[in-house]
Image (cartoon, rainbow, N blue to C red):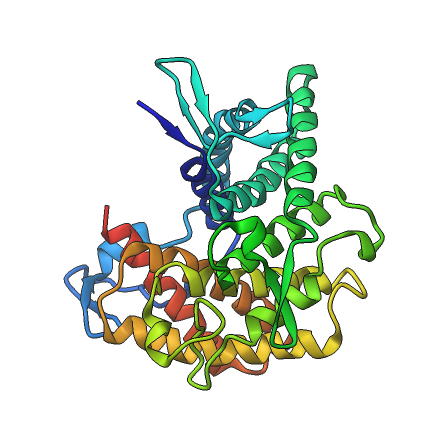
Length: 336
């Protein structure tokens, strides 16, 4: 049996999102007759009783406790997956053999960095003992070392940049930029990077690079340049990853002056509104896999939160985004 670092990373990420996103839906499922049906906006019908019991989110206190019970062993696993001689993450481990393996898979490496920041945040929020403090130090060093390993390897894209083929060893796409942004955002939230913005990766230009890949219909081209047919390639992963990064850096810039320009902040919001129209329409019109839902939930839950704070008067749009995210969540529950 082997343990995959990116799988552990995903579980940590989804657990942290799942206990912090939305308040329960009000009155939407209240009914005295459990035989009544709830018709979703895509035409599918579910009994009210099922949706009432399982619809996301769960009761916050209980789910937070469950998340902590699951996150703690995963966090220690993360620390154990660091090669302390290089400060970089292993890719795989084989517990039965006591072996670990390195591979050059940058997209997963950067995703692991991002989720390591979440694991470290989880550790720091606890009253850590000496053993846990050691895990904090190991993860902190691995995050810094890994980010710096990719820094300075960029190529121009439109009015921004992307990570270069020299460091990726493959053609760059917007998911690479997204994971670099997310890793850096997580590190900055933990004050792991120098406070001088000149010393961290070019967040503004990486963001502009992603924005430059959006088509007029709201979809994103995976590899920055291509035909409209390319927008369907890896649609379950790449666009969602890019949108999560856009919203993460938008949120972080609220409390970090100079991280991105005010123009880029506005462009992110405009881009996300266009993206919502396209990707929600795609979801309701076609069959999608659960991976589509996972990334879309994270991106548009963030958009909903941002709009709720900044544009609460736009109730119709907020309601549409909220319904979309909750429908995505219902699909994940229904898939089990």
